[in-house]
View 1 (cartoon, rainbow, N blue to C red):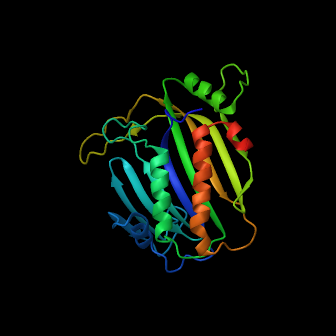
View 2: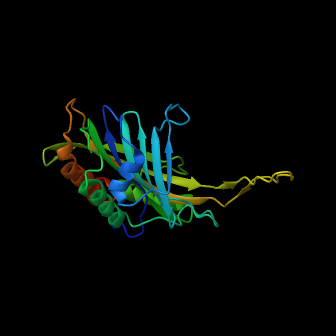
View 3: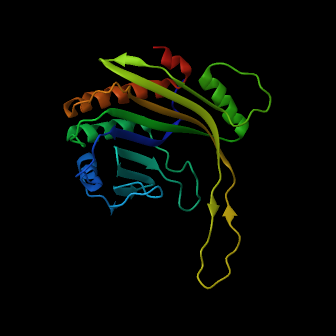
Length: 252
């Protein structure tokens, strides 16, 4: 199945580390995107409501580039944000192939994280906007490759992990397929004036594919010099499965 109507909502690369001491999100951001982040935040005392030690981000044309550092992991993300004026969830969806390749190049060219890792992960979410929930159900069954013949289904989600060894890497390939409805609520805050009730947008529907391809943990450290080829292998396999978009892609 072609990916023509499927667009990227989010890309994420993750390093799982024993120690993040001395690592700063702004420095990792500069290595990945070769520019200074617009916003930075540092937090000496992480807590459940704010678990991050440091965050660096830049928002351009509806896309947010971000680095997050928290105990045990570093995340590099590219996320499509809802439109500011029309609140469309789909306004900034992007070409997954193009941005995935660019981000892989960014994290590998200058060794964005110069630490050995227990585990590496490449993650992506794709959405296909549809007119109704039933249209999303059709996309769901197309991705599965069979019709489960249940009348009026709701809350659809299917997830499977298919391991594969590629280039000596034991890789988890987690594919999650679902249907979704989005609704945005606006809560105006007006000092000294009555606050009207919240406004909401019409529900927007989409079929969703979420892919999390990662190295299967074996208790051994992955040396930093191996990260670039591993991330490239994870990203290449993720792109291949995303392009096909069905369970059939996990058979090989």
